[in-house]
Length: 334
Image (cartoon, rainbow, N blue to C red; front, side, top):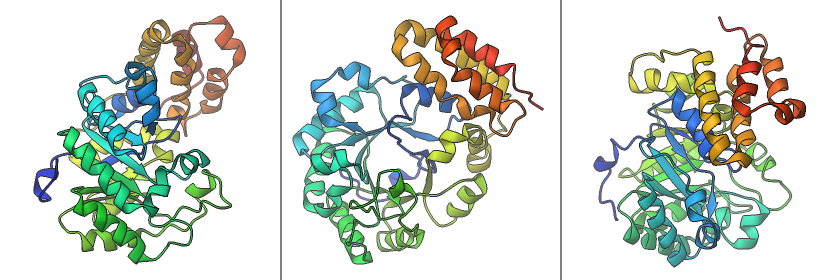
């Protein structure tokens, strides 16, 4: 689906996004985040297309309908395969399909996808065209501002220009280059210098498109500041490690009423949810509880909360929902 202008995109809700994070933003994490914000656009972790083609598609696309807006992020470089997976994502209820052109892990390097795709813009154009032909939801791209020695503005501008010509009108810019040689994926999140001015130049050069800035955003005040320059912000680790910040999103960025529940209320709701997870997916229930570790950040008793949630002894003796309820007794909420 080619988007001819910017206007139809304005009500689609990229104002605040929670970044796709491998091993973190699974369906259990998204359930917690949706309890904290109705407006934020949530993303799956990157899902490699072979996993969908050859694996348990229903389980991998685990998704609660009505909890949108939620985007499916795909990792791949085969246009036909990406088109099939995008179609399955739309049928599952996702509101957007995003192509990952930013992940620097060794896995994506060997598979010729992720940030490696920035070195092959014509292939990315073929991929997004195939995906757009297969779905009616927006097809978007998440990318870096450079790869290894290719750090000139002309390099990223030409990449965006090629993908733009293929019909993409929403670009999520992680405002760091990726260094494939010598840095781990973790180091690639911090070591390459952050330069949001590059993303701003892209926004000025492609005025019919939306640009969402990602990288290093750690507070709601910083979100508000960047929204004066960009069409949206994407927050990653801070939203995961301090999920309570998400309770400010709807009020401060969308003008909705203040969040009306306490952390204890949310913990109790998650405890009830974990009881259903334990029945439906028993191997996932501990992972689901781990996503809650940061909910007590800054409160007295937070250390005891984390200690009890991660205690091997507790998990051997009690059901997950009871562990969570007991652990919360360590926390004192004002």
